[in-house]
View 1: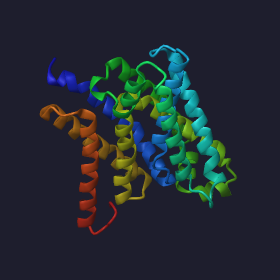
View 2: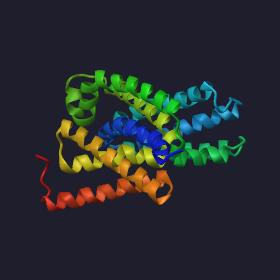
View 3: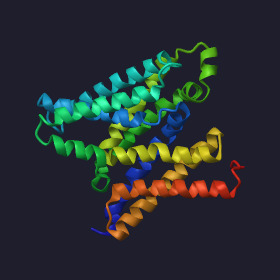
Length: 276
């Protein structure tokens, strides 16, 4: 197998992940719920492990249903706590607590199922280098459907994320909109983690959005910068991993961190001015 044949599937998988995650990262930054993806990913992982506890086959669709069911519960919890705890407890604190409890639960369950330790490790680092074309195809179809859902409700989702006071004035049911947003978001994360792992998914989601917010507040430019920076960091990480024979996932994560440093330097040289 040539180098191109080996690296092309991971490259395409990265581009599919970037297309969806980088955009959703803008919502995450605007809502100031930075670790929500980690929490939802851990909830989904807990659901997958619980499925094994009930002797569900590791490759059965029923296992995915367990993960999505747990994700739906997490989405409902985050939708409720966004407004209910406002002014008293930051939602990020709730998200952190859910992450810790779900992590502890996953460790306890993993101790009772065969291969549980390997499942926990796989969820952390993923297996992007071994992704197959059928897996990429299924991921793409699912993300297209979720992208259409996000596009149809984009005005309401964007308003709730960027201008929540306007959504309140309009009389919208913010909790209901939050539930659907977090549910679709959770499905995106649930599908991404087995491929990229928690660390890479977090980087894809947060770092490009942070880079974009350094330079502009215009929604269209934000989207372009997130997609562009995500594509650059992923491509560099894959290329250096291949040429240097280094672990792919961790290297891609490091490239995202390096690109953020470069962006900060560029912003400093520009005197903090926004993109024209």
